[in-house]
Image (cartoon, rainbow, N blue to C red; front, side, top):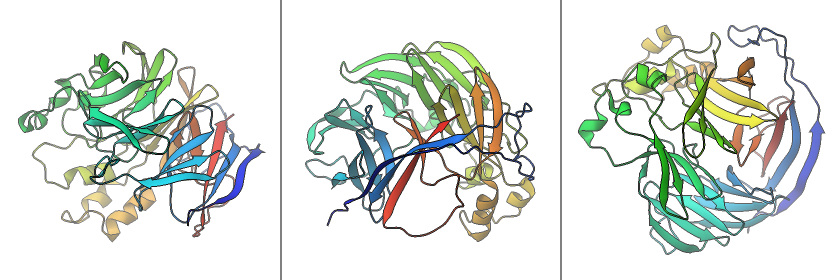
Amino acid sequence: MRPKILCPLLPIGLMIGLHLSCSNSGRENRSGDGFEPRFVITDSLVIDYLGRLAILDIQSDRSEYLMFDHQRKEMVRVDSNGQILLAKNLTGDTRDGYGSYFISAHYHGSEEVIILTNKKLFRYDLNLQLIQSGELPFSFFTNTVYGGHVNDLSGGILFTNSFPEYPSREMLEQEVFLTQLPFLTVYDLEQDTILSRQYIPASSQMLKNSGQYREMAPFSIRNDATIYLLFSYSPEIYRYTFPDLELQDTIQLNPGDAYVQIDPASPKAEPFDRFFKELGASSFVHLSRSNGYLMTAYQGAAPQKEVDALPRNVVGGEAFSALQKEYKIPYYQLIKEGRKVWEAHLDIDFRYKGGRLFADRNLHLPRVETELDQVIFYFYEIQ
């Protein structure tokens, strides 16, 4: 039996400000001007559902949400009242299937869903029946799947991070590989035309410190004829024209003491080396926009002495996981008019899809770990 509606989309309007004064080093407000933002809950979406759902995209009129159940491998359409409209498994070699995994999924207009795999585009109607599929003129340059941040699709125009041509193993193993190709790409789906390509900025940390990095796809936010890019391992936001991808400005993020710049892995390093480097360093994990603010988030870093003490033949063991839990926590930054105005740790995992900022918990209430037969999303504005 399909899950059914539990309660509708609720306007909450909680005007509760956050006044943070954490004593832990690196967790306090680093803006220096006393500014304290308010994270205001404007709506919530409650779905009667036993399991976990991730939002992949939101219709522009907010009438519908495209979600994914990782355990069941189902695409799930949910309306604005929390009613499940359709749930369908599209994996495998079936008539409507996209294969074993997807990179991202998006609404395309009001009547279609687009699913992108590494080399193909699948076009579906709202019943998730395949209309057509075809090869893309590139493959995606990302290590994040099932709705990651590599693709930004709006109005039939896709921004992505891609291989113009699939590189050879020899090219991938070169420390200067990231300077070789214009990975940043703008693609017109309807015309099947690449509108522009651009190289990763020479001022980024990945090019200043050449080597191998786990994730090279930038987070992106489009705003009319502008697109903002944030790379995981470089503490600045790049502002480009769109769709031409001409660099206009760089916003320095100046993260606080909790931030530790990562060193790249050598192409000849041991297989687990990059995991230990990430544990002992920071990476940016979020970019969003609300009420004129840009918001970023980076993860803290475990002390190098404690990382070095870990056994090198195990990733994800008890000691490794304990360091992750204690130190790999999010530090959020707010940027207004090109300047950082606030930074602090918040115990919440904000997401951003379809132009909306949301999370799976109410930031203004104590965290409670309980198993529920419902999925709840809270939508926020920054004030």
